Length: 300
Image (cartoon, rainbow, N blue to C red; front, side, top):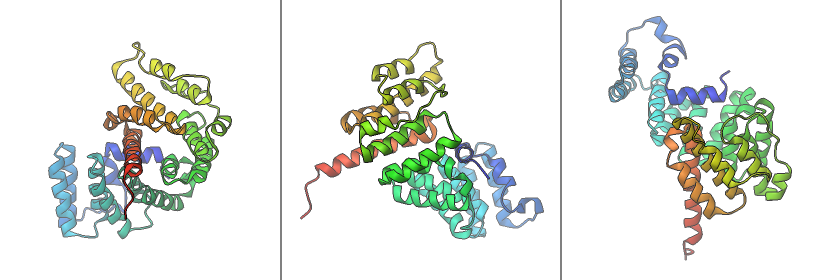
C-alpha cells in the first residue's frame, strides 16, 4: 500500500521510474509493438526535459492502443505536473474507465477535482480510493479537507480525529478539525475541543496552534514567519503558511473579509507550496464565489 503523502509527492515530482516499473510489467516482456515504442520514447523525452515531445509520443501511443492504461496514467501525471487540472482529471478518468479496481487514479482524479473546485466529485473519488485501500483512510487528510468544502463537517471531524491517530504532531490536522467543529458547534466549542499538539517544529506552527487555542496572536504568527535568521526559502514558505492559517483562523470566526485578505496573500505563492498551495488558491476562489453569489440579485 502507498501512503497518501507518498502518492501526492510522487505525482508532483513525476517519477518516471515508477511509470516504467509499475503496473502489469509489460515493459519487462520487451515486446516491440508501436504503442509501447511510442511510450518508451515519451519516457526518454521526458528524461531529456522535452515535455512537449513526451506528450506527443504519449498521444501516439494512445492512438495506437486506446486501451493503453500506463500511457493514460503518464499523460495524467504530465498534465498534473503542469497544473492542467481538467486535462489531468480526464486522463486519470480514462485509467478508471479501463481499470476501475486500480486505486491510484481515483486518488489522482480526486486531487484534480478539488483543484477545479468540484468538491463533491473530489469527495466521491477520495471515498472510492479509500474503499479500494481501506487501510489508507486514516491517512487521507485530503478527503477531510474536501469534506469541509462540501459541508460534511461531521465526516471531516471524524476523518481528522482518525488522522490524529497516525499523525500525532501535526498542527494542520488540529486546525482543520477545529474548522469542522466550529462550522457546526461554533468557535468557542471548537476551541474547547482543540487537539493538543506539542511536537510540530515547523515555523510558524507553534504560533498558529497558540492562536487557535486563544493563547497567541496574529502578530506572533507573522513575526515568527518573518524571522530574518531563517534562510530565504524557509522564510517564504513560513510566510505562506502564516497567511494560509491566518486566513483559516478568520474563516473559522466568520470574518470572511479578513480571511480573504490573508488567503489572497497565500494564494500568490500557491505554485511553490504543493497541495496546501492549491488549497490556498481554491479557498480564495471559494470565498470569492460565495461573495459573488450573495451579492447577485435573485433570479425571476
